[in-house]
Length: 351
Image (tube, rainbow, N blue to C red):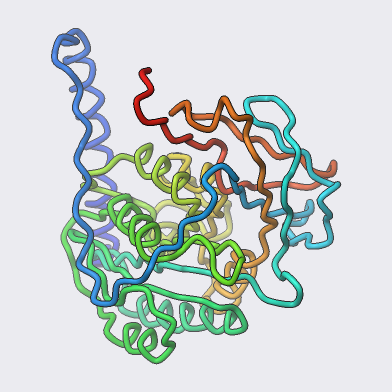
């Protein structure tokens, strides 16, 4: 067994041990219901060198991104407003506005955070190929008003480059990447949490009268270990920030747990609901050339339909969560960026 496989095996063992330990602890403590539950406080994000202005939008107008694909997984870009139905809490609502990738010939703005796993199970060759693939991703969106950021994670989450539209800065950030073994921990959820809050703080929701597409692209071996924030919390924050999470699982995972000739086993990130509930996508990097895979993800990120609706007045300030469901033409697969929204609580209103 190689050192990489040994390290990944240790990480799989750590994940399994943590799961069963947590389950046993939960059973033991089930009867102890007297102590009040406390929410984990948000960890501070790394200080940004170049803070950006945040533009506020009409909070009564709720947006949801929808990606449509056919039975072969190909993007469908020819749908019209009349092809969709939108439901809030099971009740159909009128679609107040409908946008596609381009408005009057102007490409949709995007804000992307790359979160790269540099734990010990990632090989130097994989890191080098990923740097090239992320460059191709950014080049695929060259026609779009875009900002990018780069984070790494293992034992710790690090911001290599804060959000920038300067492609030279981004290229220099890719050049800084190196293989840095970080023990058994892979803080994937912590990294997504930091990335989502970076986007919420520093990537305006609108730019030139268009909604900005926010997304986090996570590249990992698929095994989060040692996180301090839960998957459910990350999903909640991603939905609140209207951010989709895309996950690229590297071959170091499939090399140990599944044959490349078989369908890869689901990873903990897959089963957590993080991808599905944020309207993202999970892909497995089984090919040597990662360029086409990353170009396809970039194309999908910029190809969502944007539907917006006005909730009824009584729902706008009740401080509650309301479900959102979008339907489209039969035979198509729809992925929406959020399945609910949280309305603001009116000042002075009691629950």
